[in-house]
Image (cartoon, rainbow, N blue to C red; front, side, top):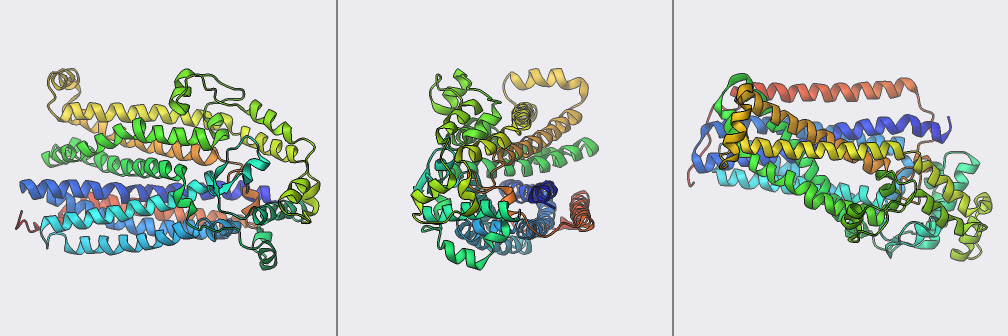
Length: 522
């Protein structure tokens, strides 16, 4: 099986694992805010319903955290087993963020256990502090993981290394890599493809590693990337919104089924936090993310906008570049820029960086041909990325409209609430509230899922943007169909069983909310 065939098999399996893990991760981010809001309401008002719902949600969070840890571990093992060449990134640019993420994850475990054990036995302000600290570490964990993924999108710290091969790319910050070592890695990977079809073996060869030498002088550079900052804020907020809306949908469903006011009160308690996040996500955080993509991911931006040729759009130009006359560069322009490399070989480029270095068989390759081949592969994703991006925008609008309508329904806003309620009254209050709660969850999950697809598919065929391809890091071990099917089956079965377990905990709250907690000192 060739490397490209292995990639075709493993890529969808990896994507499935990441999406399943992301579901549990989103709940790990969103449920603490739900619990915190309910505890705060109970603390200030003495409403026992809020305390009981907080305890029930805590039980769900505890199981969800366990499932998130298990699926995350499986995804990481899958990364190392299926894509062993990724050790190059893990051992260099990803080392500091991933090491810090382990510390944050350990802190999550400590504070979540502390919170679960002490809930109802200590004063509300202490429980509130514990769940807030847990959320902070959960968010930090998400930020650090996003920093590594952001480096795969924008290899910050490599300076002009990528642009020397792909002239349409910008420079990526200061050069904290050894350009000679990096070019040796690139050439070794290309030679691996030419010689045996599986360059991941090249990266793992100790002799090759010794001949290349150290590639990095600042192991924390991935944390200083402006693209990582925008990504972290945007991604963590998106995940938190998904988690909160899932909880909101469950309360809306229970309110519709039972008519119990405790679920309606929970919706009122949670909604202000959700409203703030849903409004800020597209208007502020999404704007930051869009500008970062336009600046650092030119091919992805062209894919998102379907730009085969340059596109002049005053609105997009102003939002992305601050200039309504600034064009969105298309693939035709990228190809024209690449033609400037015509006649230069990889060997000639290597000799300018590493004098006297033998580039092997890769040295005879035309630099323009290499760049144009990769451009063609990237452009083949245009239809999907463009469609997914604009469907994501539609779901984002649905999300915003739903949260605004729900706010108008459950809170008394002068003139507006009365008018909306009168028009929706024939459908029944409980049904309408449930509808908007469920629509919020569907829209949030859809927008986030499509956004991640755009982010990841948009950077293909570059596993590390402009430098390393999926074929460079995939396992050389032949894939066994039975093993692949069994792995997917076990993974999906475990996820379904876990979701069902959380459902059972949510619909049988009496087991977790029989006794009240302490309110002394409130």
